[in-house]
Length: 322
Image 1 (cartoon, one colour):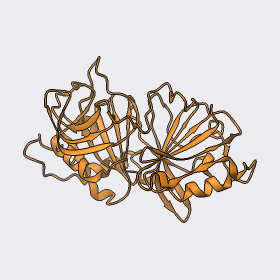
Image 2 (cartoon, helix red, strand yellow):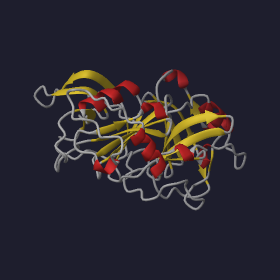
Image 3 (spheres, one colour):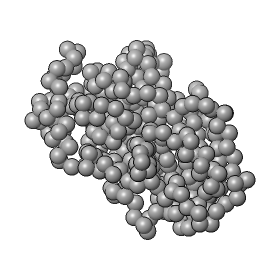
């Protein structure tokens, strides 16, 4: 477990501040000083210390409440920035998203040719992260505006399909053990013929797994295309939605990063009472292991996949090409 490296303590926050590069791009306000607290960042300021975690999967968490964005690499905070999100009537949606497109020199088709440098699209309906004006309060039409320098730095470390969480809260992710439904378990086995596995439908791309408690079904998406599905036997109902991203795989197993979802008030590993244990066909579990790589996303929801509703506007993959 690498929980001691997580940004869940003042020690890691201090490391981030101490490692802060002092140089900044001329087009942006000065970066906050090394001894400044994250809470005191002024509009347009940011912290950036990529050397804390030189490699690994990237996750971005945006807090609407604090108007800040946190960049994690390999589960370690390497950057935090002030942001400006949507105004009333143009609210920034909350949930779990993936980066669908990236354009360094994007110009908006919806807002009269407005420049959106270092744009990273989150929905086909017009929500994206990009450089823009930061007045110190929500002022956008739903997008997440970033300081120009931070937008460029973030653009440089992300790839298509990385996980972006937008939440009302200011919670930090924590490392947990492999979610129970994905652990090897010979109890109550399902026949191997009960599942579908067609990885050739989408040979490459980010992997997302969605487990529906109501449907008793698991769906695997790669690059937004369904490549597999299976029934799942649950020993207990799914009480609430939970989301994870796969941080790393080593000799001790898989290490998942639990992501804070809208309305989630707890941190740490899911309790025994709250975790619904599941059983998958062994053939499906084995096939699933072949496509799991760091950065894969798992969403466990009590709602049906037919309506894709979770009550909290959670979006894992959008495939509408508008």
